[in-house]
Amino acid sequence: MIQTDILIIGAGPVGLFTVFEAGLLKLKCHLVDALPQPGGQLSEIYPKKPIYDIPGYPSVLAGELVDNLMKQIEPFKPGFTLGERAEKLEKIDEKKYRLTTSRGTQIEAPVIAIAGGLGCFEPRKPPIEGIENFEDKGVDYMVRDPETFRDKRLLIAGGGDSALDWTIELSSIAKEITLIHRRSSFRGALDSVDKVFKLAKAKKINLITEAQVTGLNGNGLLKEVTINSKALGELKKEVDHFIPLFGLSPKLGPLADWGLHITKNAIEVDTEDYSTNLRGIYAIGDINTYKGKLKLILCGFHEATLMVQSAFKEIYPEKKLSFKYTTVAGVNTF
Ligand SMILES: Cc1cc2nc3c(=O)[nH]c(=O)nc-3n(C[C@H](O)[C@H](O)[C@H](O)COP(=O)(O)OP(=O)(O)OC[C@H]3O[C@@H](n4cnc5c(N)ncnc54)[C@H](O)[C@@H]3O)c2cc1C
Image (cartoon, rainbow, N blue to C red):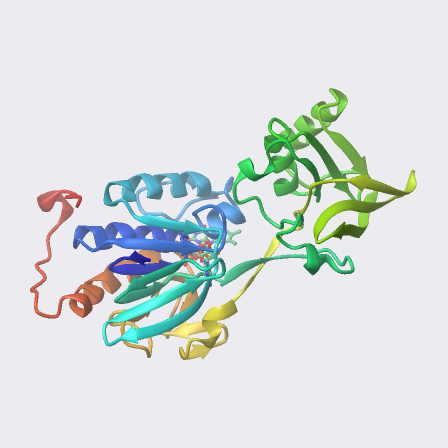
């Protein structure tokens, strides 16, 4: 059982920065995110886009901002549970919540900070009959740990950056890798497209375009896929894993059933400290709503900063909190 002071749901920029502000108050944090990597929308949707409205940075790539946030919070040694969705929240006593994730991990904390952004990014699933029977039994919608695929026969489907990047990355560890795309041209970054064509030419990967997976076969575990190709007709291929990477779409998900006051897919908060209607639960960043709300990273940073002050009082009602500048107090780790 993981125990922490503040359990942060969502490792987007706002969840990450919360670790820093909490750390200054000597509060420990653990983050849970459904995605396999930290950074939220910045890592998932626009890692290579420059952001121009982060104070002090005339321009910073979204991916670079995430790297810097990770560096900034490193001294506070936050815990991470990635690739798992926050599923069930119970109040186990007056001062403690217990969260259970989609993979059964349990974390207890007196304070919950929901920094869930637009919600959970759910994979867009291809319309193949019976696909749900093979989920986690050969069908994977995201790559959590590349090592799972070492020496395996993989079929990756998709035409965007994820499909291209993972084909390139996994080509060095998989036994055999095939990339299948329903069109002849790809949507991803030009240099990735280039690399994929070079790998195919060097016979390091198989590339099948203008084709789709139409069927899955196996007895409990996935064994074989049926492919429908414009040029070759129907073919069967033995594989260990089918990885459809058709993008992710956000959904509020399980948070919607926790008894929080929700308006238009966002959690209502009190702007004094971003607390919700449930004691000890706060909501910060894109997931909250209040009069005048702007879904901006810098607004989320501000909300996180005020929120941890209130969280401290919630955890240590008897202690006095003295406010200090980092220029005066420095960054003292645990
Ligand atoms: C293309 C684009 C460009 C943008 N440009 C700018 C810009 O220039 N400047 C700016 O300030 N903002 C910009 N934004 C908005 C900015 O990205 C968001 O304001 C910011 O990402 C919000 O951060 P967050 O941490 O609140 O949420 P997110 O970044 O959305 O992260 C939330 C995380 O919570 C996780 N999560 C949700 N529910 C659960 C659950 N139940 N269990 C586990 N994990 C969960 C999600 O997987 C996600 O990783 C842009 C957005 C987009 C899409």
